[in-house]
Amino acid sequence: MFAEVLKALSDGFLVTLQIFAFTLLGALPLGLIIAFGSMSRFLPLKGLVKTIVWIIRGTPLMLQLIAIYYGPGLITGNNIWSYSNGRLAAVLVAFIINYACYFSEIYRGGIESISKGQVEAGQVLGMTKSQIFFKIILLQVIKRIIPPMSNEIITLVKDTSLSRVIAVYEIIWAGQSFIKGAGLIWPLFFTAVFYLAFNGLLTILFGLAEKKLSYFKS
Image (cartoon, rainbow, N blue to C red; front, side, top):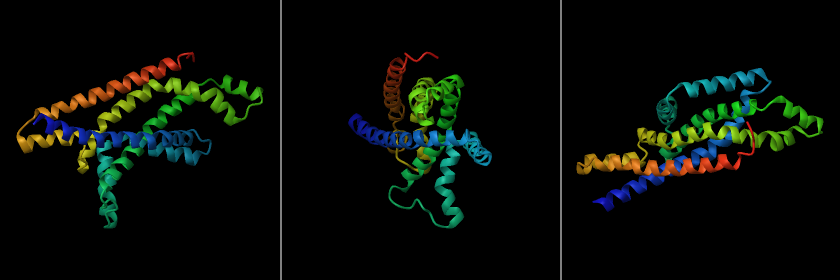
């Protein structure tokens, strides 16, 4: 039975890893774009972006999952997620949008924390805006946002369990299935081992990254 449980949980955890990885691949760059939008000098764009971020951050991710998956079908009468991997795609869309909005605020805070004097010094040296951003600002921003970003990324690992709301087979679903099927509850609690191991690895990696960038003084 243990081998059967381990296989089921491993299969579920692979889906969890897929959600985690694809969310980061989409949310990290999208969050930076949103951050630039929220700092735009074009007030209508700035206002629109800030409103969207406020709505996404102010409503539960579970509600967003339900709205994104069921909303199009209820509004148009055509379920756009009806293909084989449609549920997983809906989960990724919801997660990427949600986490991009959270990441955008972290990016914005990091960028705005850099003193204007450093930017002005770059301008005096004849550097372009892109050179100033990539050679002066970017690495300092990365160093400053690693702690809050690591918290959000670890939260993402745990939030992947919400995908079961729209029947995506992830690790919690896999563990819970043994309650109904075999009357066993320990496989559900055993899922914690997977989460703890993965979050422990992430914590170590983020710690190493902080040490690598420690030569930047706050």
